[in-house]
Image (tube, rainbow, N blue to C red; front, side):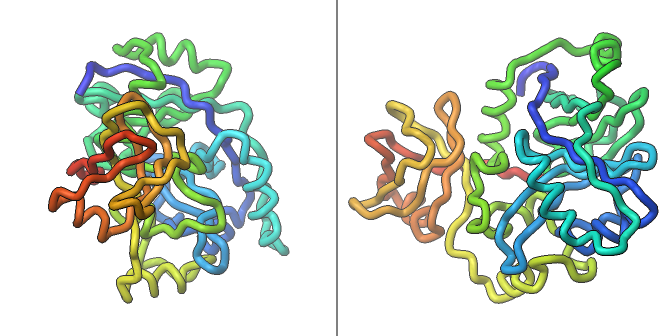
Length: 295
């Protein structure tokens, strides 16, 4: 693990306000919104009725706003899709262009921000919020800060600026997906994308869109593939390149950086790789990593 640093993330933030914001969002996403507060952030997803991936996001509360820290360039789409379910609910959805997101990562990152090393632990930081990444404390922390004062807040912290490449390599090695770089809209299902181990599903909450299919997939053990971190030896294959074993496609490269990638791999292919079967992608040797992404 490297020394602690921060990097600005390009994200698409959505703010949900209004008296019914909690109950409105609770019926839509995979996470229990009632557990989110200024001392606890969370991770969740918005699905199709068939349980297929649409959007994922970190979920935080700042003052009277629920903030969805989602994928860059997709905020308007998320607002439009969720807006179809407003009906008579007293809620407003809008892009939160006044906020920026930063990742703080490296050894003991939570302690430098006075946070317990537990996914989702949060506290106010000036007019913003600092929280341990709800997917895994190994990925460090996130800051959601007002654009106007973010530079001043960062200057007061005992950390320096790092690079997105360093952060991206850490994320990939932990097997944590990054939106559409790793998941397919209206095709991927949460349990194939590690959402259970990344604290992205609350199995005890009530109904939400896609809940029935998600639960049935878990309890019937219907998973045939997973997103896994892999090492790449050789020329880096492009995202989308097929992974093959004995000339048969068994998976696909997703996001990739600096000799590591996230791959969608069939479970039987992973078992075969453990027994010594060679996996390749466009000539590069692909080796699954035995790295846990949970805490």
